[in-house]
Length: 138
Image (cartoon, rainbow, N blue to C red; front, top):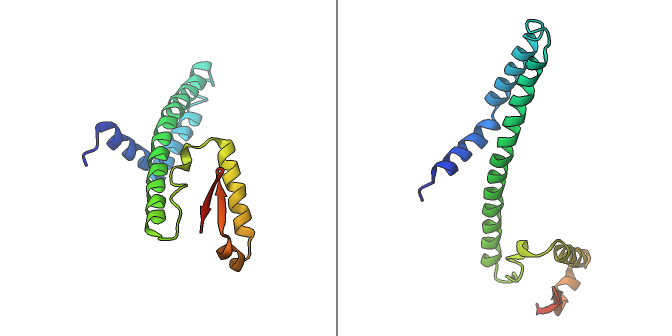
C-alpha cells in the first residue's frame, strides 16, 4: 500500500517529535533564546520570537498528534475486531460500538461492570444478556 506525502511526513514528524533528539534540540533553542535576552535587553521583540515560535509549533503539532492518534485508534479497533471474530463464543454485536453516543457507551459500560462482578459459575449460566435493549442467548 503506497502512502501519500502527508501520511509519510506525519508518520516521520510524529516519530521525530517524540524522540530524545527533538527534546534536546528544543531545549537547546530555549537555552540559546534565554541566553540572548541580555543582548536584546529582554525586549518585546525578543519575547515575541519565543512566543510566536512555540505557538506555531504547538498549532501544527496538534494536527500531527491527532493524525497519529486517529491511525493508532483505527489500528487498535481492527485488532480488537479480529480478536472478537476469532473467538467462537464472542458476540460480534459490539464490534462497531465506537459509533454509539456517549450515553449509550455509559450504559454498556455499566452492563459489563455488572457481568464482571458475577461469580464465574453464574456468568456461564446466564441465559440471556441485554445489550442496548436486545437480548442475546449464551
